[in-house]
Image (cartoon, rainbow, N blue to C red):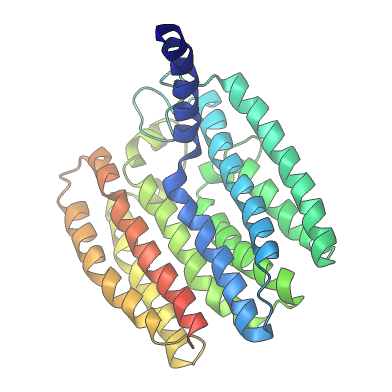
Length: 308
């Protein structure tokens, strides 16, 4: 009995390490745009293909996982994530997973993504879906990988907006309908902006350490004062886009619930940001408020399309 328990312990530790590297709490950033595209396609064209939805979800989750692992690997290799920083999952810094193991995992994940995409393109009969998949793979890999490293050049939020909004929500809609038009673009814009807002907030705690390591994020390019000002107006812009959908009839009343529910969270968040006393690393503890705002607004948007 004792031998069996001892043998099982390293396996459990290994699974926990990979779970930590995967960072599951952030997968809502993928689930919501895919579900939005699916529900919008169902309402507009009456296609409720659950098997197709599961296939698209698998491809997008593989992409998201690959992006997380690539971020860990290349930020470590480039000296951005060190013992003095809080970025990434920390599995390399804590000695739980080696850089080599992450590199092998990336090869397997991208290979699996290509294989699943090939099946998906055949299933939907839309070869142009390859362009969406290739853009997503390119973006997830070169977020921190040389030579582009666009996440180190203050372009992270722009690319996340394009990926989580137009590519995921719009690509899902296109897969089921063969159409990509203003209807899905208008729905995808606030979602993309919200996910970009999660990334933007996550960069605030490390404005100083990122800049010292040569990583230029939108936040540290703006500087502390302007960065906080941008955070202040970011979510009101999102609310404006959501309310516009309601006013124009593109979304139903549930979207109002998401907006109303996220306002107090935003007020709490801004109070904590303004009272940090220059201790930017302490803001990492409040990132859950941004994710909750996204969850509230994202789910309410999906329901508002479903019940419009």
